[in-house]
Amino acid sequence: MDTKLFVGNLSFNTTENDLQDAFSAHGVVVEANLMVDRVSGRPRGFGFITMSTPEEAQKAIQAMHGAPLDGRNLTVNLARPREDRPAGGGGGRGPRRDFGGPRRNRY
Image (cartoon, rainbow, N blue to C red; front, side, top):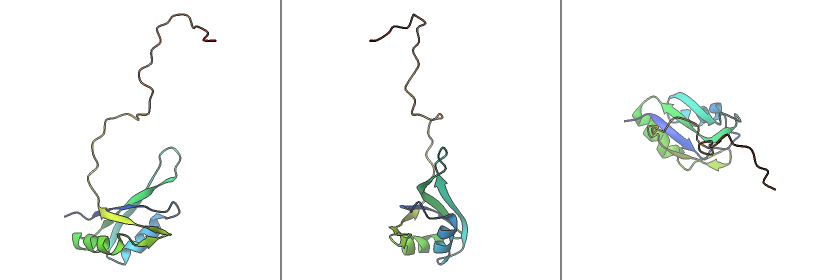
């Protein structure tokens, strides 16, 4: 049984310390991580909590799912393993097609 929890619907003002404090009432928090956008550095609105035992993790889910924190009702459930995704950033415009000919003015 897992001890890592997904915590969603977080306020952008919530800190890792806020998360740790909220969940520590339901057991020993081993780790608290907020996910942030790599480019902007801003919070993404979700994070992960690792509890010390599966029993504490289950107790935290029951107590914290739907509970308010910083004005938002939390979504809390067992974290699923990260799915394998293809490498690369995505968001590109496809392959570049430059055939080396003269540039035409399109007016």
